[in-house]
Amino acid sequence: MSNIADIITRLQVMAQDGSKSDKRLASLVLSDLDFASKAAISEIAARVGVSEPTVTRFCRNLGCDGVRDFKFFLAQAIAIGGQYLKPEPLSRDAREQRIASAVTEAAVVAIQRASDSLDMGTLISVAERLSASPHILCFGSGGISSMMATELQNRLFRLGLSAVAQVDGQLQRMYAAVARPESTVVAFSVSGHAKSVIDAVQVARQYGAQTVAITAPGSALAKVADIVIPFQPIEDGNIYKPTSSRFALLAILDMIATATAESRGTNVLEGLRRIKQSLSMLKVDDPRLPLGD
Image (cartoon, rainbow, N blue to C red; front, side, top):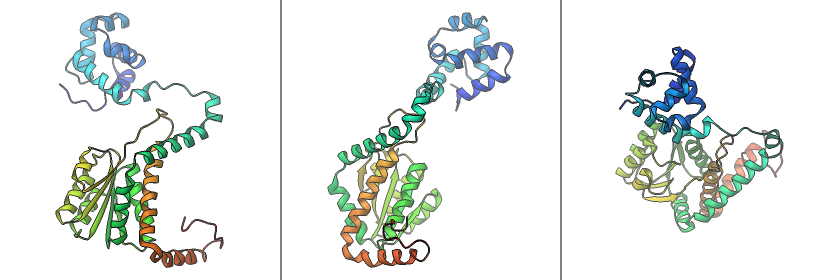
């Protein structure tokens, strides 16, 4: 079997630059993916008006071993990204009246679902560990998880904690290599399969650090961490809207930050006061403004 990364792109190129028969076949496939993935070679040939050997040559021109190989990769592409190939058109009413509610309602649902499934005892124990840890490493890779690693650093430093976020894979491994038994590593991965994060957690554990993973239960990352806060995103099917999962993950992070601050108690107040005082020199002195945000 061939190794084709993206059969859809190859079809799109073929529809523009292929031979006359290849263009017709590629256009048919792209216009009716379900038919092309299931129809017999004779049915495909008849619909386009070419011979069966022409269909076989078309599949080989795409880099496939034959029709069967072509159908395998096409079915795989449909399963992975089919929702992006033939989306339902947006109505004017949907754009003008439903965008705000689609985003806010999905965010609320995602946060509530994450909250309902949380083991608060585990979360509190993580916060207590963080509040006493002299060395905290925050790791994340990818759009959501890297943002969370950076945000956790932002939330913890103002509590007087020494926290460093790393989203570069090699730096994650380097920082993990200098972890100590009193260090705490917090690793984010929505999928649980970010290799650089998994490797860094394993390296940190090798040197005795306590490791916490906020990730999919049962994932590769969950299996190598000492403590797991399970996070399982469930999308709502709106492919035009950014994922609501990041709101839920941010809510979990905020719970950890809040619990950590409470664990440290009044020790955090002087630092927070200094930050507020320092920033008041740079902008309008309004005590109602968020701290550093």
